[in-house]
Length: 520
Image (tube, rainbow, N blue to C red):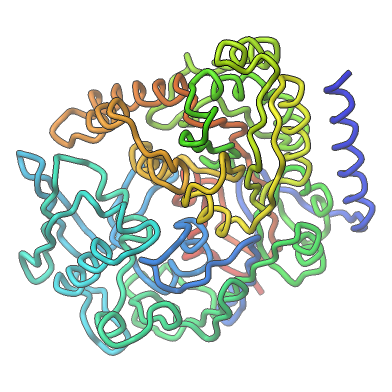
């Protein structure tokens, strides 16, 4: 009875969304975008997102994903990239190797990258950037750079990192915001929050923090000749889902990532293509173990039993997969034995609460709810939890504000999207940090994490430890993972080269637009 009731409510919401936007006919693609005509190198690509960063400074990103995808990766080249298979590859780095003791990582840089004023992007420039990244009091990047104790320009185009312990993390971390390289003059004399100066093909035409970033291609000597085939790129933040949908339907936005539950309003329209991308991003209720009842693992496990993941996924994230663990199938760390570890069982949830001293259920206070999560999700979770005696009140916030507030320990839980990370272990660095876990890691977590990242061990040994770490997180009910989302990307049929095989597709998502084209 209960499941039928909230499914009907979700269906009614979807129907209203369909009525507010007229239907049309068009093409839908499962593997890649259109853009089959002649490439227009004078074109503008207009990208829409639900959230935009408030700083251009890569090292001051509050959310690596939000900053990276909002065009900052087109301004600044990065040291590494992550393929759609989840493997790290060099970008500014051509080759790299560890010392036998695993305490040093030596990177050979490409020699044809430069800034607009002719300054070469050499080892000294990289040293200046990485020293800043590891010492600046920043929300995320300083923590990611913690394994690095020294950066040396060991040759004109050779950089050597001294590490506090043998770890394979750094190439993955340097594929994110930590590895974006700024002009040293900007660091020394400028304001990286509001100004930009990188070696990428694009510079900033205009910038409204949190709202809009307009980039213009202004050089013909960029080292990657296949990249930057679009003259201008406009990134716009549109927080309201209906406004976002209307912008795509009305042609004000050329490309945008939709939620599975609201793509029907534009899918099939003439002139639009839809590309489904199974990403390493999903919904999760992140928990603050420092908050009273949540310090008891039985209470955390009760929350997991109280959630009907499969029904939630079917109703609100069509085409996606229920999420039982912290690695998606096909990626390192995945353990098939963890699938359906917490089947929907309100009775078992009540038993665990009673064992933990809450026979009449538990009141958990105000949960922070990101304004970016799918409409209706909070209501469904609240109703399901109440069936097991778990009560909370939602407190909706902007996703970046919510992340900061949760990191400060000011709430018991935070409902938002979380990602697999740039790699399994790299993602765990974020998961053990305050933005997803204000209580911090445990000794057992640290032990397993060290085994999963020790560069002296074989790949097989590291993978075994990654699986063991994943098992530990699930057994300890580190959070309440819900859904691995298969995102529909909707775009004009003039947009080319977009596919589920782009870099970052299975980890962060395909947010690097460097090879996209717009046809005439």
